[in-house]
Length: 434
Image 1 (cartoon, helix red, strand yellow):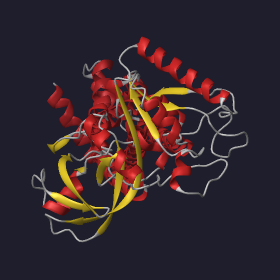
Image 2: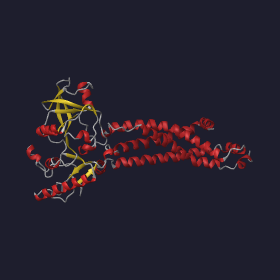
Image 3: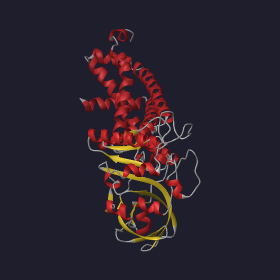
C-alpha cells in the first residue's frame, strides 16, 4: 500500500513538474537558511565542558577603581591581577587549579627542520590538561613538580607537530623556544573547543595556541599577556606590573562538591576583605565563581546578531512554508474531479488524505536534499567569514538528520490543510457537472 501511494505521488509530481520544482526549491531555500543559522547558533552556544558543569569554575574579583572602562556596572573584570591570581592559587584549596595567559614566542627547530617562526603560546600550569580533558596524541602534560621547578618542557599542538615533525611521535625531541632548549613531552590531538571558554577574554577569533609552556617560564621571561587591562594605567617594569592593578590572568578551579564550592567562596570573601583592609578593592564586593555555562552566558558567547539571524531565518522558513501550502492547495484543487471519481469508486477520505499528504512528504524529502546542499555551503561560508568558527564542527550526523526531518515535517504541515480541504470534497458536486 505504501509503495503504491509513493508511486502515485511521484507520478503526480511529474505531471505538474514546474509547480513541484517551485515547491521543492522554496522548501530547500527555507531549510538551508534555517539550518545554517541553527548550526552557527549551536556551535556558539554549546558548553564544551558540559560533562563537568558544576565542578569547574572561573574565578573573578573586582579590584578596579570606580570609573574603570573595563567592566560593566556590578560586574568584575574578566581576568585577575597577578598578585590576586597567584595568592589564591598558592592556597591549593581547589582539587585542581589552573593559571593561564596567552602570548607569542620565537620558535625554531633543533631536532626538526623548522624555520624560525613566531608561535602562539599558552603559559599555564599542570592541572590544565586533566581539568579540561585535553586529548593527547603522544605523551602527556607535565606534573605539579614542574610548575615548582620551572623545567623546560613543552606540549605541542597537533598542527605544530605536523609542521615540525611530520606528525611523528616527537616526545623526547627538542625545539628552541625563546632562545632556550625545550624537550617535547606531549602532543595534543586536534583540540579546538568552541567557544574557546578557557581564555574567552582574549577575544573572539583569537588563534589556538601552537604550544603549551609552564607558567613559571613565562613569568621568568617577564612576558605579559597579549591582552591586559589596567586602571589606573601602568607602563613600568615587569616587577611593578606584577604588583599593579592590571588584570591579565585567568584562574580556573575544579571543586568536587557543593561544600567545596561554598568553602572557596568563603576563601574569596576573606581574601577581598583582607585586601580592602590594605586599601585595595575600592568597589563593593563583586566576587564571581562561575561555571563554564555561566561564564559563557555572562560573556554573551551567542551575540544578539546571531540570535536575530536565527529568528529571521526561521521567519523566512515560515514564508516558504506558507508559499508551499498555497502552491499545494492550487495543485490539489486542480485535481478535485479526479478525487471525486476516486471517492465515487469507494476511496475513503482517510485514503485520499494520506495519499496527498504522502505527496507533500515526497516534496519535503526532495527539498531536504537541496536544503542539505545549501546548509553545507552556508556553513562553509560562515567558517570562512567568521574566524571564531574556523575550527567549529557545524555539521554532524545529528544536524544532517535534523535537516531531513525538519524538511519533511515542514512539508507535511504545509500539505495537511490542502490535503484535508480536498478530501472533504463532495463527489456528487463535480460528477453531476460532467
